Length: 112
Image (cartoon, rainbow, N blue to C red):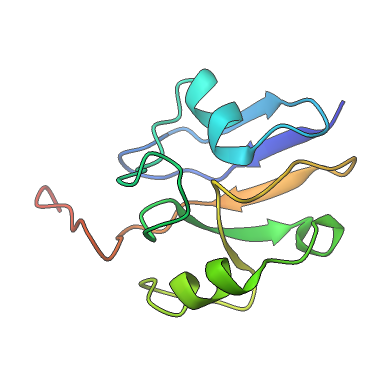
């Protein structure tokens, strides 16, 4: 069973987290089920960029993003080559190390 390792994020998971996921799970759903509140303004419909994450490990094990996701990612704050929308990431058989960016295009933390 693959693990998803979330790096510490001041608001979403301050201590970081390690969760187990089933192959075929969507990354965002696994996170939400384990108390990691990744923003998802479009209700996981691949229509915004608020669930943007950066895959620090395991990126190459994922299926390629489609054109819709790529077009949205172009608008994401802090885009990196290993960026994906967590509502589109399907967990494979390799562990993933995930960084949740500090900001999204729709939300800037006012507490920092």
